[in-house]
Length: 402
Image (cartoon, rainbow, N blue to C red; front, side, top):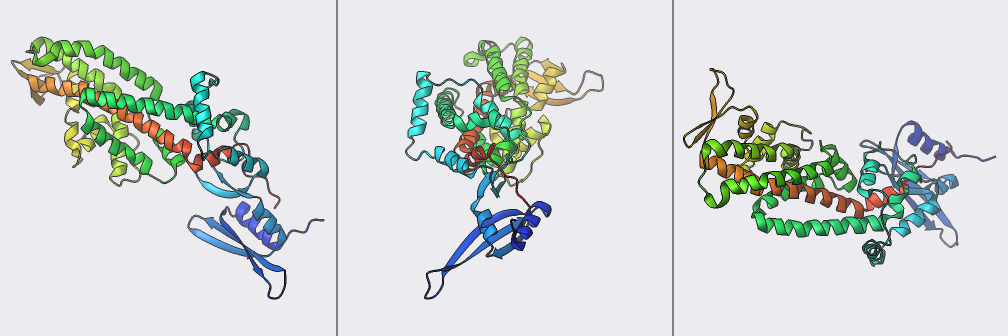
């Protein structure tokens, strides 16, 4: 018959019934004077919210329990100590993920280049599915998610390669469109997602919860919109060409709307990043376009860079409430006799705003958003937290006898 100590029963009671978690363990050994034997004592620190409970014990079953503990991570990034189902497998998986000399990563990179390794699934989508799953341990499907561990270095090599390609494209477009200042400002704002916590899993998950769009579909749409508007724009505004306001302004306002509409979720995302950098711990996930524009323009450091953002230009185009009188463009708040003029522009002023939107803000925000997406993913993949999550899959908290 197995005799369970009262200390062990107390620890199990606190963990399983009272919902404490183990935050720290220590084992102390002191040699007895004039003897070759040692006095040993274990200390287990339990925590629930801000409350800490320290238990000291000399019971053998408590020592055995501590020896089985491993650091595991839930899909929401929370870290805890718990006995795992298979400690030996846990240790082997940790060793597999160690690559101090980068030989495993380099070998994976060569495999991708030579086509010796070809993904049969979308690794980024699978990462997202894992991190969007309900926070739990020991119940994640090892068959479903095991490729994230088994193919770890190939996934890392792929993402780092794509990040390098993106940075090269970023440098080319930065020079082509002269958008250095905008990219610097947007990069500073988007860094709010990376700095929100010290846990890359939590940061990545939070960023994804702020998205109201599918990244792949959105960026495909953005590229398509860019191609649709480019020819019309350059024919109309090439080298300061004189405008025919009656003919050209409606076309230009349509271009502005084509640019602004698909950018709306990105503008919302950028506003969240700015508020995070400004010290707002939990910004609203969704605000209206007008509210987002107001927040960006009000920033004391970078607000002037967003002068091409004007909801009224979009409003005038969408509601056909634009009137052209000579070289002046009026935008009204409706078409009734009681409608009022809410904005006026000189024709050339409006044309320059639209040109700035198309040639600077549009490409800058698209590039900055993709860069931030990959920056968060890069930090996630190389983080200790993510690696421990991988070894937790299918080997999480073991069932314990209480």
